[in-house]
Length: 484
Picture 1 (cartoon, rainbow, N blue to C red):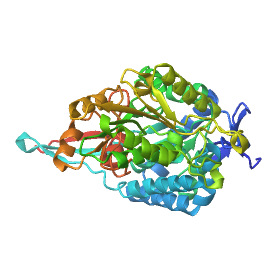
Picture 2 (cartoon, rainbow, N blue to C red):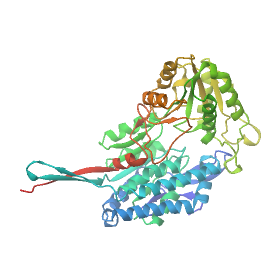
Picture 3 (cartoon, helix red, strand yellow):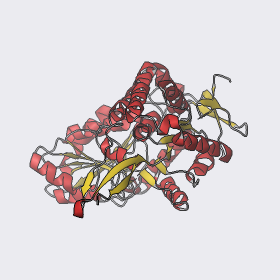
Picture 4 (cartoon, one colour):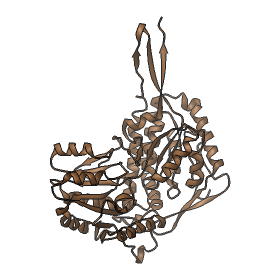
């Protein structure tokens, strides 16, 4: 095969699409061709599912000791670390994120393998005492063949976030990465085979959402689906799986995370953290603190911090050691630019940013971070997920922190939130009342793979990370034992 081509990874080997089709993958930093990928359709999905089903039932996988599964998973993490430079370069080029951030993502992916490898042999059951000397025991069994639909913003992080606990539980994986970032997933599957996983346990099907993705989630032959992406597509996934009663084990959708600063909170540090969020991954994160909610009197100081942090941010190609890379593609940049234009039309004030650079960056999908003030809760800037480097500042009257809390909770999303206060008691009290599943107190972007993360409302359901993400890949079987 051409070294620039990546085929599906099915049953332990790379192979082209059965229809012979492929698509191009471009570097969003300069528009150059990174490689080509197999364009999957129904026949490729059918082959991947058959492979995963056969592997799930095989003696090599179904009968292997749990501790061996854990060792294979730990080995995969070691191989990711071994090949981190090569993998990070590929990730940076197809996604556009700076090389340093890509290296960090490979490290997180490896850590998922390490963490869940230790859980593989600890999924035990319990004894239930019953009347008349009888008793029952429960055991946890793997649910079976699970499809993982992966987004483009953290493609290898989110791939292993789902695949690692899935494999630890004894399930088989069929990953379908986003068409913008398909190449790295094939390399991870290749390493899984090298680590010792039997053929068919870790499959990857490439292609477009309406084709390969839809064929995958519409199949009655699956035992579960894990999806991370937009709320719009998440609803489509639910409709497709419902027809066959295939359970969606985790559905992580959009976010519109608030950063609520109370009167005794450090507004400058909160603003600096929000600035960092806009730069990191070019603001393309579901947990981005995109709504900075502050006392009205703090606005001048907050704007000063934001301008100082963002005014001279260095944009550049992923391999040039920039502070901030491009958006994932021109279509995504247009979506963000449209949101900026709509915000201005609705009366919000663009303080700075939101510009398309020219010169040496003209070929890429770059955009400078945008900051809006005078944002009202009814505006689209306060309501809609933009998924780009745009920050909206909402002010509440000094002394009325209940109004600030109401602004923070005025969203259909509930993925994450941030809270700033110097009083530990108030921190706990307000955090409990924030309508989000994940609250960081006096810090920016506090996430850990050991900690469950997921959404409420239109941010979805289920949890990723920690023991809570492992258990959905199992089902409980009860054994009733008659002793008399």
